[in-house]
Length: 179
Image (spheres, rainbow, N blue to C red):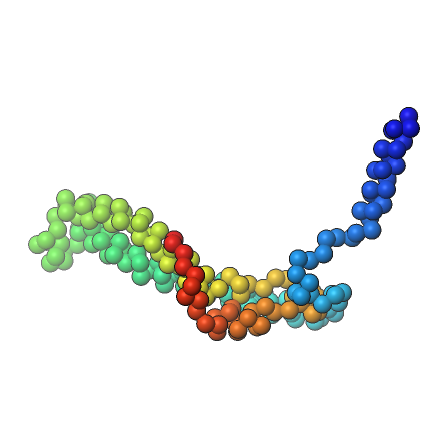
């Protein structure tokens, strides 16, 4: 009986000690000014709108960069498949001069197949180019957390590290990665 009571007592003292620590401290104490002071309602709303707008702009910048890169890299596939479908007699059967003199149904089918075969390696190359540019320009570091709107004193790392999204800092030529 005394062994059971000592185990229960140890569990109680452990739970009492765990109540004393409200939460784990942040990993980097320089990131925050302790204690964090919440903003007023209107100030929080204004900061929320600013951060949401900034995150939407960063999202559309990423989307535009991805669209441009994929369009440029996949342009050969787009052209080959377009001419294949345009000159095939079962699909569009264009009356253009190149369709009548150079491309028949079998060569149009070959263009269509070639276009779809070269598409997958070009998609991989386009994604590798996009990922390397996004990493180099640190585009994902521009996305800001919502806590910047709720609390005062949360530091903006991109400003301290050399400008918006750390793009103003010099290129690091030492770091290389194979994609």
